[in-house]
Image 1 (cartoon, rainbow, N blue to C red):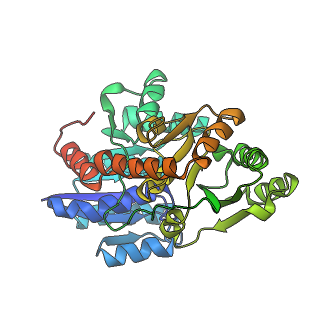
Image 2: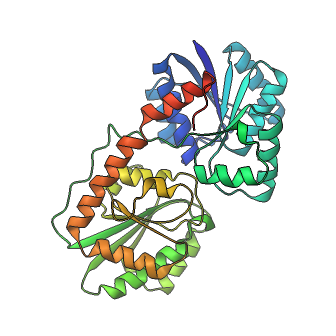
Length: 360
């Protein structure tokens, strides 16, 4: 039996954390013993802790200062007889690399989740990738190509796209009425998500279809919350806008919506878009990261260039004009997820990687 430790910086709500939890839950089915290590003990979402408990995942939250945590990790890896360390994001990748320095027999597999990083993180990640860790798993092909060109060793890069659990999530009920169209965006309130473009596009759409009732739901959290609310007031769309801060029932809210909108300036593989597709929603998104693997133009949605208000409104309008098109595109979204982004595929790819078989 192979023994694997997964290291996360936190277990708050986020794409990397979701993938870590899916992997920790699923690997034992493939005869892999797993433990999950959380660098920041106090930073864990209650729903994620519930997931860990319900799935009997061996969980080690770390406390104390950095030195105490590193000592604790060394002891955990030794006591659990860990052979492979999987990590997500820069801090966790650095910690994984440190564990390899302490025990050269351990294989370390880092994780890079985006196609763009701040300069200081990029420099750190490149050093860890080229000189410390055995492999870096990118969750997106776009990032792989960009990072290769900037000095990442190609032979140490593997792409394993995100997966999502869809078995327990039913598709939304198809609607036969256009009484109110609900557009939804899920994402952190940060510059990367470009909420300014999203809000402006909704304003133009509302003005264009004056006879249509609209609702725009934004779900997330982050430092730009007040800025988003202020812009909504300025655009006079506050009556049609609802901002929800980390509600526990996001899958249910998605199933009650009609169109998913993403205006991100850069991405890896978007968990938010994947969750919307699982719910059976048509997608309008910017052409960034690996969105082209999720959204097929005129099949389950539309891709548009970043900040292109004209095209965003046009594509949203196409979907608003046809309830039948929304229903067909929504079914196609779910079909893409079930075919190409299953949990079984993710686990198979990682197990093959553990066995030394690179996946491309």
